[in-house]
Image (cartoon, rainbow, N blue to C red; front, side, top):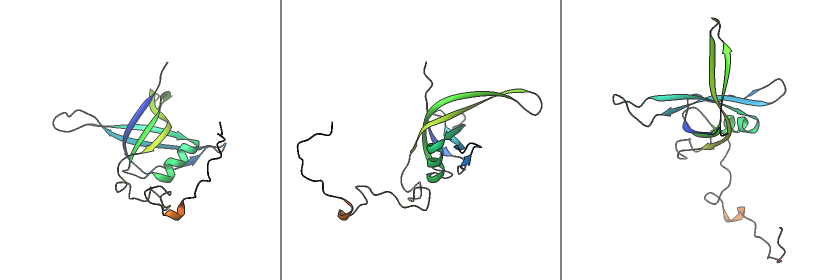
Length: 142
């Protein structure tokens, strides 16, 4: 059996980190996704609920804000409940396994969603940020 979901869209609101009674991080957020077809000249939008757990939840809350593009890989889950009027309802949500940045650096504000600086990379590092690797001794680590 296979249960794989991949979505990409914009965050409807800034995600907030919550903690369960056992200390596990959890974050729920909604992703707005335009459909590929247009009806009456307008493209309808789907709003997909997503739940992230543990480190993934912390990552989402630390680096993503309302309006940013986000890509989510995960699985679809459903749960049944009874609403306040006694009607049986079914809720569907994507449980995130992996979350990734999308869009340009300027779209995200260039600060990766928080007050932290971007991690050092080849494109923004100085020569002093790198360490020379010692000569190869011929011994392979595998």
